[in-house]
Length: 384
Ligand code: NAD
Ligand code: MG
Image 1 (tube, rainbow, N blue to C red):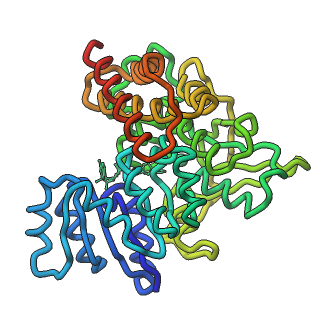
Image 2 (cartoon, rainbow, N blue to C red):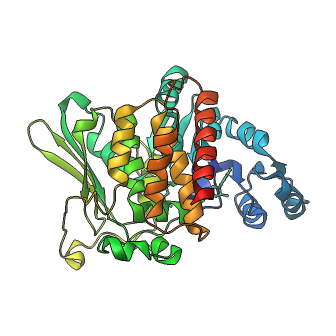
């Protein structure tokens, strides 16, 4: 039996993780489950999987969680400090599935235990960069990529020397708005933006897929997970989301990982690594899909990947600023405060007005950069 904690248990990645755990019930013991609030759902999951502890990040939701868990013998806790403490409980594997930079401190707490972290929370790695990868090395932790593209690359690399790699190709579905003109993009509503054609995901990452910031963040994520040099990571639009990414070796042999557009597949690859486990997914039916197509990304209509590449080249504080500005702009778009096309513009403005030095050396440095970029974004959004 292996132990697992799930940070961000009530979200979309959490849902997919529980579907796998249900199928392999006897193999897993659940330690900690966390959510920001959603006390009822969190308590139900904690009872179903007999978790040791359930934690809500928002302390205001703790009374409800306590009530829901009364008599169950499951511990309830609330607040940021409790959440970070829970993430530091030693387990065989931690599923890091909180959305946004809010997940960074909990992920770092898990890394400090030297365990295995299945990382879905890309914003944490984008913001912290080397602060996280150096902590992973220092504490002997293992980072397994849950993001389907990075999981695909991880599988295609199969432990090979990165010096043998000529090119990593990150595939992108292009999102639900891929074919719209700039004019049409101005009028996109939150409902249209979150309606992804291939993947069922949380609201924030769905908007990121529509703007292509998701691919921009993934470019930075890939740069840290597979340090081959930014010039050897490219983005290719592939609307069917069948090939999840590719690795070309220096002999021009290219390996691709294919699979259904189902997060259970990359999650299973992390949970079972280095072995395999069964998933309740429909197998890929290539004859039914018929055709796989590929396009260059259009960075005029979707400037996010260009902004992310520049931020990654600059390094230091810049990716954290980009990420914070994007989180703020996405929230403003979802709240109906700004049009879709303003998201990238706000990010560009925040990048232009922020202090990009000094280079972050600690978790606190990253959190300070994140906080400063958020207030910068707030000021820009208020005058918009
Ligand atoms: P989601 O919005 O569905 O769920 C987010 C979870 O984080 C919830 O449990 C929520 O309660 C918790 N949370 C939110 N804000 C928090 C805060 N301030 N403090 C503590 N907890 C908080 O998101 P999701 O779609 O499951 O995505 C989770 C992460 O995985 C994101 O970083 C996303 O980019 C990444 N990811 C998701 C998918 C997917 O298919 N959904 C695929 C690849 C990567
Ligand atoms: Mg992805």
